[in-house]
Image (cartoon, rainbow over all chains, first blue to last red; front, side, top):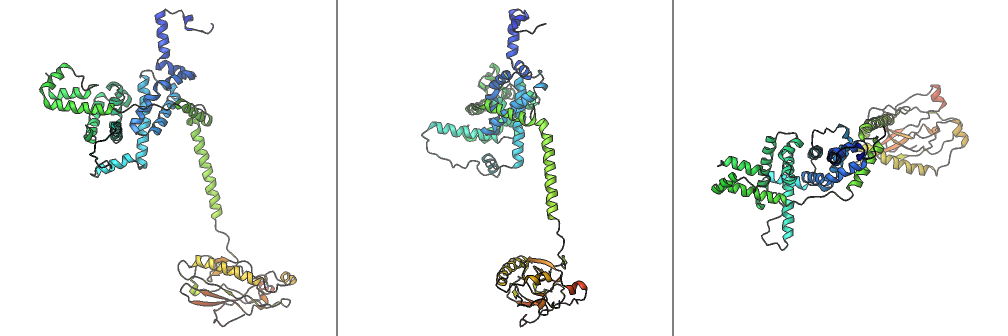
Length: 214
Length: 271
């Protein structure tokens, strides 16, 4: 029996043929192809998820270089563990889980090392009862609206970065990545109830930290 | 109509806090507290949605490919799994070898002849090492022996100071001694011990304080000891007399020499 050179040779009806094509172009299909050495399939997976994963890790770590580094590590792990991948999960759940684990591990490692960072500095000052911001309040109207927006965005990013790990991941997944509760529960390997509870707590934390902006 | 708790749960879990069910909207129209909660939730949602999405850098794939190739090159098909144990083993072996080499290097050197390491004595009570008077050899020529003035710090940090000072003094004396008439080659051959002690020791224990360049000391004049002026940091000076010794002396080797303790003499003493 000779090898097939095209999908037409299968003799399938058109509808079935399109289903096969769709399957090949699905995440599962691409990973399956990557597993057999198809580099183009893996490159397509990278193209699909590189921005999402980078953005997600960036919101988790508030460090762009680190986010890129961890996003790449995520794809490398996907590639290495392609043989063990189980199709019972959505691929997005799978890759987000890897990225989450990497980000949380890195955050914990940093905490252990007690790296001095601005974020840590602000957090410490806040815990000591001092105002978290070093900038004194400026009551003058700012001329440039974009400056205000930038400052606000930076404050929000900082506030997210100061959330405890267990609250940060579900909040970012829900309110920034707009994932469903079910998917978040799958990524974090928690029950939906726990996810909802943690997101609620995370929002309460954020409201406290961002009082001046609400 | 929903209760406040149900309404807030819906506000919390809705993808967008302004897209609520009709029942929740009805409750909101009648409940100011829930309206405030919704307004807060809306504000936070607005703040979070202001965060601009971050994109991966343009060279993301290139860098990823490079990293993957680098790991494949280093550790086989899938990176560390094969490489790590080898690396750890290699690192362990190298560190063991280095530790062994350092230990070998730090191993105590065999003690100098006549020296007895272990005790250290302050310079105020410097007892010279046991020496034996050596009678002049008939063939040896007496020349003026050097008088070495040695300043030794007597404080806790004394030994270090002393070593530096001794070395400097020794250099000076060595230079001075070069101007003296040199011993005839025949004499040097006749008695290999015709050398000034090249090692200065502190105390009778013979602990090495400094190593001096060889100073030719004519053993023939052994009746007149070498005088060493010791000064501590407070300026107190003490002159110590050390009799010259030649370990190559025939008398010593023959066991005829008498070992006599050397006493410090007054500073009037000369060779």
